[in-house]
Structures are given as C-alpha cells and as structure tokens.
Image 1 (cartoon, rainbow, N blue to C red):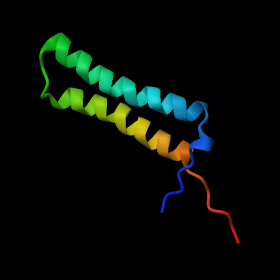
Image 2: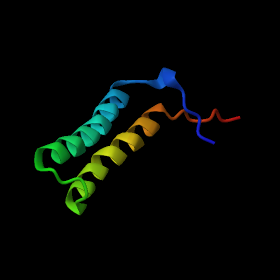
Image 3: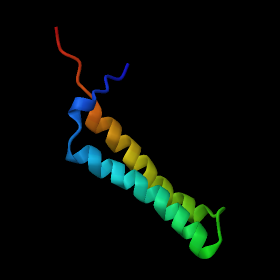
Image 4: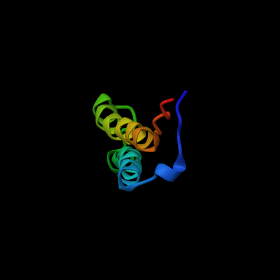
Length: 68
C-alpha cells in the first residue's frame, strides 16, 4: 500500500503539478488553435507531460515505511 503524506510536499511536488497542468493545457491549447482533438501526435506529446506529472507527484509524496 502506498503511504502518501501531504506533509512531504516540496518543490518537486509543485513542479510535477505544473508539469501535469502543462500537459492538459497544451492539449487544450492545441485543440482550440488547430481544431484537431483526435491526433496521435498530440496524444504522444501530452501523455509524456501528464504521466510525468502524476508519477512525479506520487514519488515526491511517497513516504518510506519505517523499518522495525
């Protein structure tokens, strides 16, 4: 089970959140600007940002279990 603790929030958590928002924002901006919402190219770029943000947030908030 993952031990997520919000007290572990640091600059890496904030940067990962910004990376996540950048991926979503980029996808929305591209769709509005070019009118293309279903394109494999934009998916492949956006998913790197979005998954990178999610993984970064989880890793930065993860708390190591105490050894007995």
